[in-house]
Image 1 (tube, protein in one colour):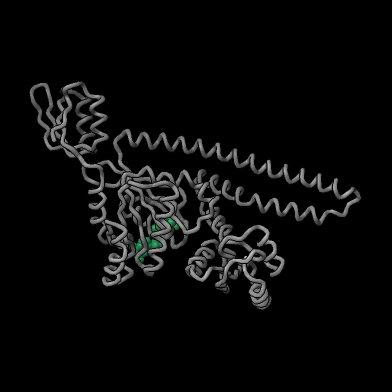
Image 2 (image 1 turned 90 degrees about the horizontal axis):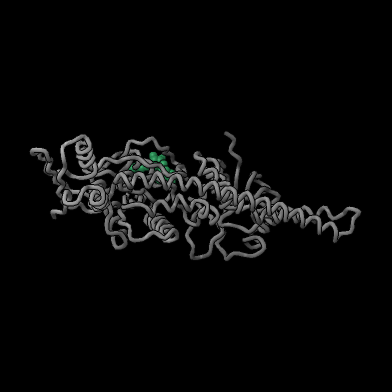
Length: 427
Ligand SMILES: Nc1nc2c(ncn2[C@@H]2O[C@H](COP(=O)(O)OP(=O)(O)OP(=O)(O)O)[C@@H](O)[C@H]2O)c(=O)[nH]1
Ligand SMILES: [Mg+2]
């Protein structure tokens, strides 16, 4: 695979953290070969995003080292990008564009592909505007009066923008249809009495590795960012319960808003969970771990998630020593009530995590059920074994007496469907 060479430029204010390592991981995941980096600590400037002195200094570096691309973080405006391209005579891309490139590469489902196309189109609208205007300015040399040419150009621009808007609306419709189908599937699961646990957390924390270890699923795992883009759900074995575990798209700080909008439905699925497992990477420095935990919390807030029980899975403990683990638990404990140190890859203490999850599931109460003999009753009983804990199963003359611990949603369903007087709460 061809890996174009790139120079990284990070601009940050004095009080902002140095995120060059993460930016390098983003660039590498997108397929660039990084040959240099500048960390510019200064307030943003309107013309180039960075001061013109720095632009010149970097221009000299570019002349000597000849990277094919300059990758800039944070996001730039379309006119800043064009000015920098002219000043450096090199292709310039910002962090948002590179994240879009990664999503584009990794999209496998139709939903993810459409979500990315939508994000790309809405992100590129201002660039389109800029490019057409630029082209028109250059073309103002014909015979016709300038005013007439500008008029025709504006028409062309408006047409192009309308076309993009129309495409965005069309994608939106398709995405809504996909969301409806997913909702129906989800509803079926809920009706069958399934509870849902969702893995959430920063990209590369090890969510898919944990999903695979707990459910035996075949989700893709890679030391790259945004390997997973669409939600994968599989059954997890918790005795007496029907539970599914979902693996989903990872978070990153300052996710481009066009992507956040496009992936809204996928992210919103987290809000359907009965329990959320927030996966953190224990091998990060304390500062990085906290930054990523906060970014995950911000995303929860942005998508309006609260009130769902949350367990922190402090993952990758195989990479650090005991003292470091204890220190990180201490640091996290004021914010998070439940922190379970694990290694998804080495399968360390996954049973402790499952027990913690189990304890957070909606409680079971004991019910009495009286059934007549028959095939229907037999299949109902075998279902009760799956969704709850059957304590007593007595076969009397003509009737079957069952006592079982059941989750509240199952109990409500039975209360509705069984004949009056045959179903009651014991404790
Ligand atoms: N040493 C160690 N590595 C781990 C562990 N869990 C995951 N990894 C590694 O971390 C990398 C990322 O793992 P994934 O499971 O793909 O992470 P993810 O959170 O699903 O990432 P995205 O889908 O990209 O958001 C892979 O190289 C895994 O092998 C662990 O417990 N210990
Ligand atoms: Mg993943």
